[in-house]
Image 1 (cartoon, each protein chain N blue to C red):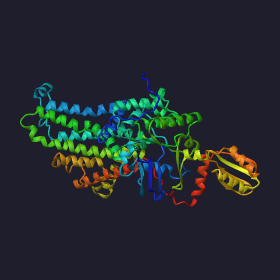
Image 2 (cartoon, chains in turn brown, blue):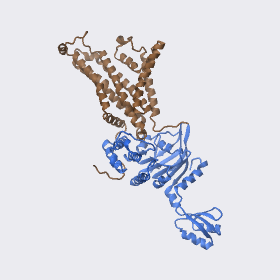
Image 3 (cartoon, one colour):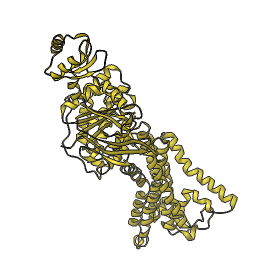
Image 4 (cartoon, chains in turn brown, cyan):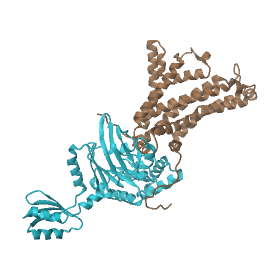
Length: 294
Length: 312
């Protein structure tokens, strides 16, 4: 064991750059997360569908294997925009589940025992705190959503022939941007709920409810009034609508049962409003001190 | 060198109520005690210094830095030990302190080294690998102190540091605070309800009442001036006796019926008082030599500040 002098001494050594200091939060959060077996299990499970999609791409581009396994698909194996739409949709839903577990652990631990004043009494601001926590979710969910999407796109580009890459290069934008929109909305809503509720398990439940209850209410609203505006309360459907537009699948999917008919701009406005509301809640809850009114 | 704390017409409002009212004063002591009854505004002043509250009027400068304009730079110089529980339960003590030191800007290896040092220094060396959530109240207080000093601040803000501690732990903590004060050029701001805590550790005191300054006093000076403070009951030519004592350089206050208070300068001994009394034919029937404690200063400030406008 090292021997330390029992005296106080001031620190005159070097300091890390202020701009990147929020990454300290991110690093410690990841270290804490990967100590949890439940998290590791969830994380690995979230990547499993990607393996099936990778196998599909391999199969679609290998006629010898198709003949060997005697696979016959009407119209042949297609790796087009619908394939990546489905992949993104599945991965973003898995990202939602992962986020429900992760997000409360990030914030609740700091808030439940009043550690926030210790963070904010340092050269460290509340936006940096939120940024540090959002970075954890963004990195984590990126690994589950658009990173596998790009890897599979690269795999397909490598295996496909006849200029597939150039004709499908536009899909990189919806793969990355739509996932980023979902991650941003998910992380802000989840952080806001976690900051509001503070208790980890309860926060996980409330995040689920925050997505499922309004969706149910919206469906009831639609059924009773015979309208489609209730779909604005179904955040997953809003994202789906944006994804459909992003992957240029309107002709195939618009009009199908279950697809919201709300205009795209309304979906965007709703998502922006959700993010603003989440930021407002975060601003109100992430205070170093409670303010007693009266 | 800039004063430790400068208050310039500081006013803070929270939830529509004015909590701090036109505080103006300069605190240049190295160890400043913050005293006042509940609701006087002690914690609000600390929170304003740390930038948790924005002043509605005026300003507060700490070591020359404005709390509003230079908030980050100011907080880089500060170590803060809050009054309430503040920890991350599922983290080992030393890792928690390392985490906090890294947030203050220390590189990882330095933060780790100083976290170990701080833990050993506050006397928790053996318990540093235990989860903070399993610590006793006293250990949590010491952990808060460790995280406050790990990054080597220039100003250490301690909000009720001895809350909930048993007498030995309180004594140990106060000794540590005194050691830290003596070990370097660090400044202290200590808020406490316990006058003895402030008396033992501080050399200057700011007393707040109803969000106003009731008094700022230099404790070291007060101790010196009150060293020879006499309360007497006499019989005889009282005014003559008083003027004779004044001739020796004493300050006298007469209260009638032979009662008087005398403040003796350093050069005058009690023997000289007896000698003057004998020469003037005055009987000294009772003499009480007492030091004016911080409690007296505090109570006087509370009595006198009723109509004060907060300026000193």
